Amino acid sequence: GAVVSQHPSWVICKSGTSVKIECRSLDFQATTMFWYRQFPKQSLMLMATSNEGSKATYEQGVEKDKFLINHASLTLSTLTVTSAHPEDSSFYICSANSPGRTYEQYFGPGTRLTVT
Amino acid sequence: GENVEQHPSTLSVQEGDSAVIKCTYSDSASNYFPWYKQELGKRPQLIIDIRSNVGEKKDQRIAVTLNKTAKHFSLHITETQPEDSAVYFCAASLGNTPLVFGKGTRLSVIA
Image (cartoon, rainbow over all chains, first blue to last red; front, side, top):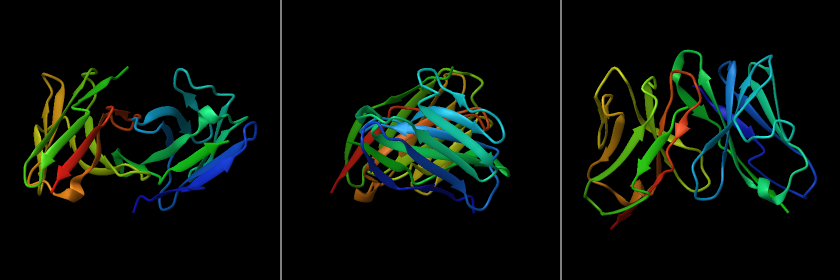
């Protein structure tokens, strides 16, 4: 149980275009999901907390107009990277808490974004 | 906010030896301390976790200790094997709040 999926697993896009990444909880409802970004050989850094039915909470330094987050249902959160640039190339990972297990977070498999 | 420091950044051990990775945290309210193993290009995989109401937890070759007073926790891997080679991250959180990760330790087990 407690499976989180992401789509796509990898994407290559041209500079200036937008890319949407989906994060789904497959067998549980997630009122809260988290989006992390991981650059090569670095740690996971929280970008934002996605709350179902309300606006996302962004971490300091993360541009909310560039990284659009929509948590429209209890099983789906999306991250849209708008006007992507090469410096946005990274590994994007989402996670969610299972309602019955408050502490443990379940991670999606990640999305490798490369902006050319 | 919470800050997690992790040491060492790299660690090489001979197969069969033990490996120890240490982390400190800053927020005394944090009560959940997981450890993750991450292989290249993969998601972090939870290997063990501990809550603030216990001081030690063990699962076969892996153990975690927690010192709330000193605000540090450690991962112990015994009888290391080549397949233990990976990057290990510690993290801290308060219940269902976002995890704050350490910078990671690259463990190499030399056969």
